Length: 266
Length: 94
Image (cartoon, rainbow over the protein chains, first blue to last red):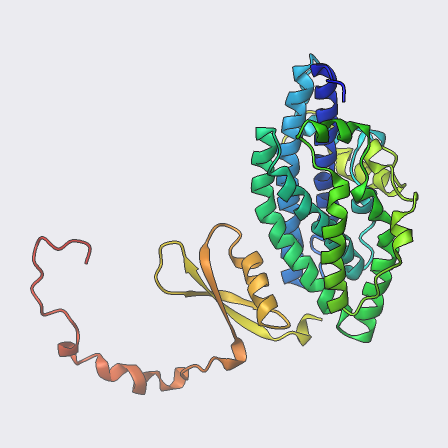
C-alpha cells in the first residue's frame, strides 16, 4: 500500500463518515413515519426511541464529517447543512435502510437485518485508531445492543406467531434479503481506511452476521433465503450514491421545510 | 390489536429510591415484552435503574367501600404513632 497524502485520507474519511451518518439519518426518518400510526401506543414510542437514538448518532457522525471536510479547506458545513442540503445522489446510506416501511413486519425485518449488522460494525469501530470514531461508536453501541435485542425479539414473535404474521415476516425477509449483500461490500475508499486502522472491514462482519441472523430466523421458523441471492451483484450502490427511487421521496419530505425556509429555527 | 394484549402495571426503582414505585400501566403480550415496553415508555428520561411489571389482573386491591372499616379505627390510637420519642438535636433528616 502506498501512503496516501493527508488530503486524500481526509476525503476518504469524510466519505466514510457520511456512510455511517446517512444510515442513521435515513432510517430515523423512515421510523419517524410511524409516529402516531404505530400498531399500538407502546410500539409507537419504542420505534420512535430507536429513531431518536439513530438520529443522535447521525448528528455525531455528521458533525465530525463536517470538521474533517473543513480541515481540507472546504467551507464548514453544519450537521443541518449536510442533512438537509444534499440531494439523493450525495447520500451514502445503504439501500436497505431507505426501503419503504411497508407493513409492520417489513419495518421490523428491515430493522432486524440492519441492527444485526450495525451492532457488529460499531463493536469493531470502537477499536478504531481514530479516537473520535471510537468515542462515537462506544456510545452508540450501547443503544444499538438494545435495538438488536428488540428487533430480534419481534422477528421471533411475528415469525413464530400466527399464520398471518408468519407469512408477512417470511415475505418481508424474502423481499429485503437482496439488500443485505451491500452491507458486506468494501470499496477503494474503505480499503484505504481499513489499511490505516480507521474503518471496519465489512467483509469480516459477514460470518458473524450470518450466524446471528440465522439463529434468530430459525427461532422464528422463517426460512432463510438462498445465499446466492444475497451475494449477487444486484442491489448495491447506496454507499456510492446510486439509490433506489424511494430515497428521493423520503428526502423531499425530510428536506422541504429547511429548503423552503432556510433560516427556519425549531 | 391492543385490546388482545393484557394490561401490565409498571414499577420503577429510581436512581436514589430504595423501593420500586408504581408509575403507570401498559399493554404487552407477555412479561418480557412488558419490560421492554416499560423501558421505552417509562425510562426515557433516566428515571430508573430497575423495572418490575405485574399483570394488572394479578393485583388485588382493597375495596373503597371498606375504607372506614379498614383504616378509621387507627385514627384515634395515637399511641401507635411514633410521635412520643424525644429526638436528640444531633439527629438530622428525620
